[in-house]
Length: 315
Ligand code: G3H
Ligand code: 13P
Ligand code: ZN
Image (cartoon, rainbow, N blue to C red):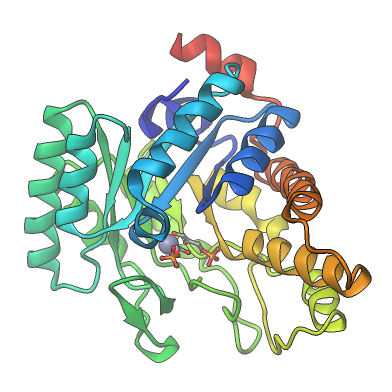
């Protein structure tokens, strides 16, 4: 069942966070639904602009619609990740998405407000909800590239003003994370004080944490042992998700960790079976490993076990 992120956040706020997972293909989608059902968790399925064009947006829509039929007990939101204004309107008008993210965080505060407000008005008119971003994460997004030195933590007072002026439904805050596998070069960590201040100013308002992959060192080591060359990768401590959740983070975005699962599974499989050339045996291994990974994340996020209660709330 497709619901808005707003509905999911109502049940989660202050208690746990919903996992928001990026998908690009069939195997990821099947693994995602299985993992969420196995751990009995509601979830957000995220589609980036790059994912929409990797195969075709209609293909992804078809796969997700089919998964919804194959796994009818699932409760999830379909969300555009890091949208520009044009892609937001396409998704709003598609009739398929329940939520969009407008990312104008690279613009001035005034311009970010102006663009976000336009998207919020268009989305709300069609029953969709909107996530926006204030502050700047480091790392690489599709239309935004920011190096560590230029990343900017969210200003809590500005955040309150931004939400008031735009009417946005949730806010992605920069609290020290960045996208990709190389988040922290030293001993930096999450800036909980930013979340605390925002929660004081806007109690009950849902916050989103991007760049939340934990880049498990064991996963990186296995990839490198199987021929990979990923050095110095470091991510977010997943034991900190629950603290973030109590401070108002209701959605935690994870993409890179799923890519690492894909890389490890494929490198090890073909290293161990050099004569293999059928795509289905490896596809099966990946779907099973991806499902396991999702279930593990949901345990760390605290969303595991909440599916029945959320289904009652939304039906
Ligand atoms: O934040 C970006 C997400 O990880 C999506 O990545 O734009 O390469 O699909 P992508
Ligand atoms: P990671 O690169 O840490 O997985 O972050 C993904 C993300 O924020 C998607 O919007
Ligand atoms: Zn992101």
